[in-house]
Each structure stands twice: as C-alpha cells, then as structure tokens.
Image (cartoon, rainbow, N blue to C red; front, side, top):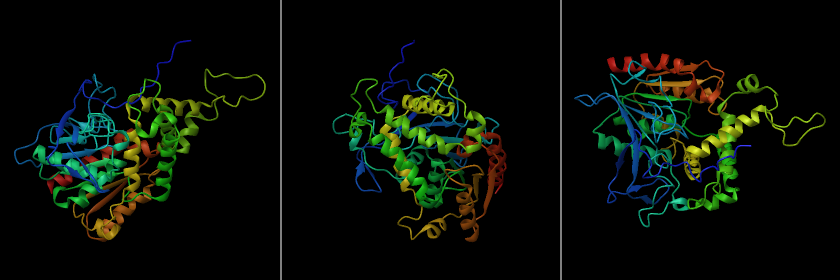
Length: 393
C-alpha cells in the first residue's frame, strides 16, 4: 500500500517560496493600519496580481475581489508557487467579459489571507515569528481599507467597477459604502449586505471543529512537524462548508447512495466506518484545502464574514446603502442555500427604492453557491453588457 504523505502544518505561502505571478505592496511601518475591532497592524503587505494596462487618465481600472479561500490568482495558468488555475479563468482575460485588452484588472489577496498578504502565518514585526494566536480579529471593512491603500499605490483614484462573488461581494459592497467616490459601478454576486443567523451558524460549526483539534494548539502550531498540524480540524470545517456550497440536487445526482469505491464492502451486516461516495468527496476537499490554506486564516476570514454588516455603526442597513449611487448589477443563484437569492434581490430592492440604478440577474444553475465559479458563461453573459453600458455612460 503506498505511503500517504503527511499533510502540511500550513498551506500558507511563505517568504522564500516561489513567487509565481504575485506582486507585493507593503504599507510603511510608520503608517500602521487601525482596525475596526481596536488595535493596529504595522507593516501590512498585500499580495496582488494585475492584468492589462492602466490607461492615460487612469479610468479603466477594475477591482476583482475573491471569496473565502480564494487568492489573488484570479486569471492565469498553474505556475511554480501557484498550483491552481486562475479561479475566474474565462471571465477575466483578453476578449472575456472582464476584458484585459480594455481594462486594468487588479485582484489582491485579502488582509488576513495566507497567499502572500499579511495574515496569521506571517512574521510578526516584533520578533519575526508567525503571528499565530496574536493575530487580531478583522472585518471586511479592514480588508477594504487595506485595498484602498493598494489603490493609492497603483495610482487608481476610482475603480470603473468593483466586482466579487461571495465574500468578494461583501468587499464590493463595503467599497461602495465606505468609499462611494472611488467606485463608479458595482457587481455583488451571490452575497449579502449582512450575515444572517444561519450563515453565522455554519461558520461557528467550522470554528468549533478547529478549536477542538488538539493540534491547533490555540493557533500557535507553525513549528510543528508535517502531519502534526491542525489539518483534521480544518478538513472537518471545510467539509461542513462544502455541503453549503452545492445543492441537494447536485449531491444526489452525482453521488446518490453509492458506497465508496475501494472501501470495504462487507457481504453481511454493516460497517460503522464504511463510507458513502459523498463522504469520500468531502474527505478529498477537506484534505485539499489543508494543502493550500492556513487554518488560522480560515478562522480569521470566516469570522470577518460573520461580522459583515454594512449597516453596523452607520444607522442601519438602509442608511448605509443610501451611500451607493452608482449603477449596480446584483446577481443571485436560484439554487444557492448559503446566500439565498432573496439576499441579492434585497440589495436591488433597497437601491432602486432609493433611486440608484440596479439590475438583478439570477443564474439558472443547479450547482448552488459555487455556480458563480462554475457557470462562468452565465456570469459573463450578464457582466459584459453591464460593463459596456457603464463604460458608455
């Protein structure tokens, strides 16, 4: 039987690893970032990628924001240091809906991430050891404020559009509310203006799974040997989330009640640990995430999503949304059980009631929440004419 390689302690990108297509921007340490929850971060670095060229009047820049376990590699091939294809290949690129022959496209790994941006696996400026349990709680607003520093660095005074799905859509909404003069159009996809109790509940279960893994060590596990990190807790958390990313129809059609190929199939009676095919699928996705992501980043980013509420400290939802005055395309997915389409329709309804032009498009896909990553043809079919209309004014 082939020996199984132990899972890494963290899947975070570390200084010294192959850079791939990453670029890096570091906020000078003497300009620390104040955080929503109190405290500051010094010497914040954001890893980012760009495609296309900024035009002479700097008016053609588009910011694309990634989801929970995404990163800045939104378009492009697998390369050394970036072992996955661009997560929006086919939506971003020459001649695509987000046309890199026309637009200067930017995507950054969020603050708190693990693919080159400052996060829990990053060296603390005081002692050079990973932040670990010392890393602060973040909000989506904190992530957006860091991106605003990056925009300043790139010379982008305002974005032609800010676009994102899931957590990326939360960032897009926060951009338009926090910096209304720096966003000229908006595309939130499969997202919400505030996390609901059920969405928070899913996140809480995942965090509990990680907390109960003794190898998590309260967040200070980075000096453990391969195989001795919190991969089990992270894998279980990801398995829970994976169930919410797809629909019942897709799970039933793909797996049914089939038993896992290769597992023992006793001729008589039942085996308590005999797996169904759907269990093997979840095991695979849990292990794959442990190979490319950091457990602490998973917790920090997930908490930021649960804290997301554009109306917090802004006199509520309606008051916050009244700051958005630019053309908006709200996009939902009919089969999404994690961010049901009523939440994207609610975005449209509040904006239209306040006089802001907003279209709503619903993706017709059985794939659930992940349809914004899988049904790229439908995303592009709505996105391309919207961007054309915005560009023509």
